[in-house]
Amino acid sequence: QVQLVESGGGAVKPGRSLRLSCVVSGFTFNSHGIHWVRQTPGKGLEWVAVTWPGTSTGYYADSVKGRFTISRENSKNTVYLQMNSLRAEDTAIYYCVRDLAREAFDIWGQGTMVTVS
Amino acid sequence: DIQMTQSPSSLSASVGDRVTITCRASQSISDLLNWYQHKPGRAPRLLIHGASRLQSGVPSRFSGSGSGTDFILTISSLQPEDFATYYCQQSFNTRYTFGQGTKLEIK
Image 1 (tube, rainbow over the protein chains, first blue to last red):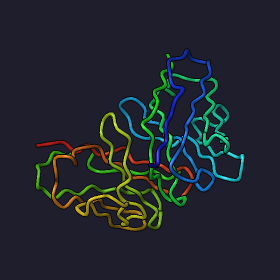
Image 2 (image 1 turned 90 degrees about the vertical axis):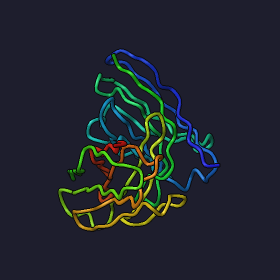
Image 3 (image 1 turned 180 degrees about the horizontal axis):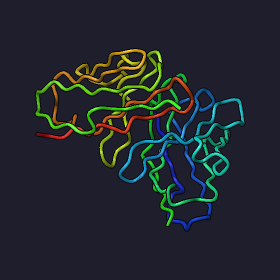
Image 4 (image 1 turned 30 degrees about the vertical axis):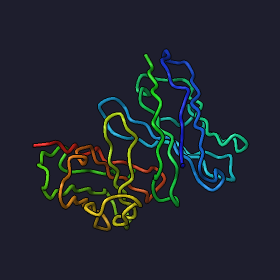
């Protein structure tokens, strides 16, 4: 069964840091890009970052560039999102999502809530 | 940046109705347009990718059309489980911009 399970969310004060984890199973981890997408309260979906297999370079939304870092640990089938200098506007549900052929997001985790206040 | 605009923002309909939701891109995105369904407390679900390709396991009452800047999601006969928020998303560039969502409610 294909699964992505997020953890690491919580409540933090502005300026602090938090690291989210996403453990994947049921598919070949090294064959897929993995994204983070967030949903802010009362608003819609916003793409945050992506990590592609075979490279340590991540790509980011302008709203988080320079503050967030995405990484992957192949031996653990895990993707991380290190979030530094958190702001109130980063408050959201963060979803870990599997990439489909660099075209769509086909499998989503259940999400982890981050509250910055 | 590519802006995605959905209309309407909300919609009331009855079971059995045919419903269409429109998504417009601020520039041409070819057919690199996806549709997602999102219910409260649940993970979003990919319905359509590449503008018109039905994702595996999605009922055939869902269909997508369009190319360039204008796209449509059609639900041919609404079922009770279809009441949700629907989002379009462009994958033409790696900003992966979403539309603001269309909330489909029961009339």
